[in-house]
Image (cartoon, rainbow, N blue to C red):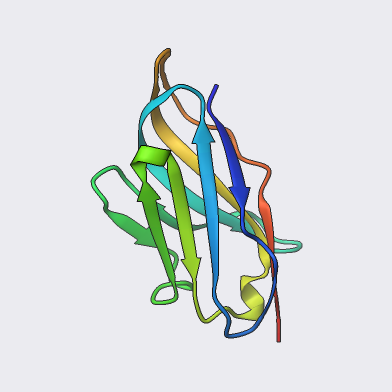
Length: 121
C-alpha cells in the first residue's frame, strides 16, 4: 500500500517562505497525479495545487503566483514552495497521489498525516 509522509510545516511570519515535502513509499514504479490540499481551522479540506506526470499544474486562485508545486519522480517526492505567506494560509497541509503504479498494480493513495503550517501576522 502506498504511504505518504508530509514534512516541513512550522510557524511562520507573514511574508515569509516555506517549502513542504511529501515522500511516497510502497514499491512505486510511477505516479500520475500528485497534489497538495489544505484544511484551515474549522473549514473543509481544499485543493491547493496539483501536477500530473506530464508536468501540467493546477493551482487554487488563492495561491496562484505565490505557491509552486514540483516533483522529483526519482525520489517519489512532491514539494510545495510557499512564498509571500499570509495568515489565511494557516492550515494542515496534506498530499495525495492518484494513479500510482506499484509492483502490485495501480492504486490511489490515502491521505498522509499532514503537516501544520501556521502564519502569524
